Length: 399
Image (tube, rainbow, N blue to C red; front, side):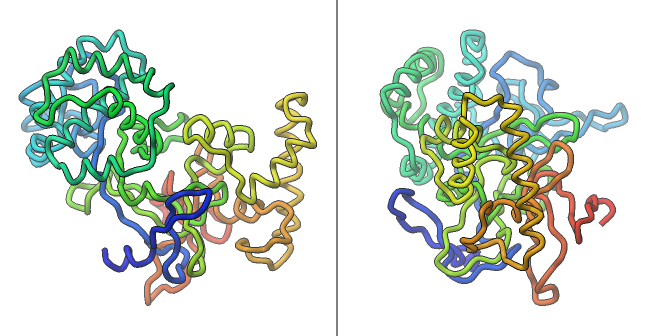
């Protein structure tokens, strides 16, 4: 872990706030961070439900196996609320002192009776605030880390937090740490909005991915966004029990980066167009992106007349420009990083580093380098797990 920590250094960048920069030259595929959550909570709706309604372990969030008639005994269930299942007794035991403590379990049970008055977003906010209370009860140092993360409440967020705060205070049992104030609850919700990572359902070519749980990761929260990221996040939630911590986040470099360069992730799939990216960043994170890619695509929007143009025509023109640029880029020997002469800096990225599997659009990164394999032509998708080798897609089963 020490070696991974030395790969990145936390700094303040004017106009970008806290950031992570390379403290040494980094290689494509290199693991630069492995981070465990200080807080994790389910994304399932708050409803009165039977244990069979959830397909995930209430502690580690692995997909639960389907029940078999020949199974010697059913999966263990929470003895306090009888509405949460666990993949094994080890998870049940660990949850009782962390993610599913008796106080949190009883509070969720009480809140479920009032869930019909909450919107889906408010139900998630309620889950988070209860998880934050639970964290304050169990680990004051981790709670202080949560308080130190980016995110400050504003008048609008305080007003939005009023209803959910009042409901929790009136319905749930008081925690040992005491009730948070409305102002602190609003500030915590702002930190959750800016810093939470979604633990996703398995990839499917036929349906969009949804979130099974959210986690707050203290070091990974320092990564800034770029629409042409040089690193990407891998998670292995459904890895077998015993293979590391399955809810850890692992960040790998997409390509080589020199010392001193900021290391960035993309906060969403890289195939989204300029208007969609800017809208999501403004609404979800409170900033407008001015990365190299956005500067180029902002000019496209200006030429297209923005809202006056038909959306379908915008997409068609953007695709044509992209195709032209890909032809120019792939016909040259230029590298993707740091070449100011590129008119469309994202073209090489799309060809080299974006998965084109149906309904995926994940990001490709080489495997971690080793002494025996210093350079690999294989690229792994961080969403579907497919491998790409010399423009040929290979499934994990075939590799």
